[in-house]
Length: 343
Image (cartoon, rainbow, N blue to C red; front, side, top):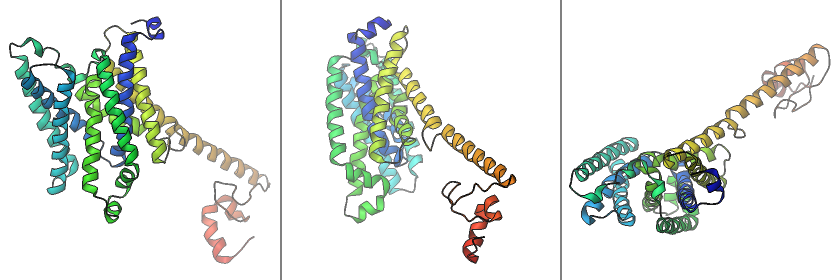
């Protein structure tokens, strides 16, 4: 597709861009909760676990209708999520170990089923492998409508349970002490994550879907300390990555949309890690350089006999006017407070 076709809002481009933006917005919103709860790899396990559900849905229905295949993916992903929660909660196996076990078992079973389907003399089986890496170009208007409906329901539920999800993320024990059913809330939130992953499988596939769940939230975390702002930024980053990735892939010949979207969202994460205020690497380096230059300037003024030191001149530290404090305020302040000396 050429740039003029994109600028004139070609139908195929608009359809794919809308689908990518919807799942990017939804995965960015729900990814915030998984990153804050340190469960980032749950998306990887659920997306890989969706493959056997897709294959079983095809075997049972003998059709490649997207809605039916995604229902199979939803059931399979939901079972995998419940398995992870049950193993980590009722056994001594740690959470990350249960994730790895579930991912391997479900994905391995899915590959066995996919190989079996491909060896059967069934012409309808062609194209099922697109769910591994995604094929956004196959999105149709009815797929967009389904994705938009699911996204609207999930976002509405997030707004309704905003306070409950917030307290679940930051203080699990306190939520339980207030009388909340934390186990039920945990399962409910995980179910919403499963929904967001399933609707994105057709765009980026089971292999790359976890990146869309984690990366926007990681990027947003660098810019703010407030949950509401972080959620909004994460949703915007996810949607922007979907649209920009679709545009870039449309400019090339036979360039897959899913991997390009992942590259774009990775670039957003890198920019955030470098340039975000207070947390960004470049920001911290510039701040350290500024403090160092100020300290050198003050030392030079002291050598010239100039008194340029006032309380609070360096950072937020208040200190006296004695020679020790001018050179080493951190060492002098305890003595100053102890002796009551202002000279």
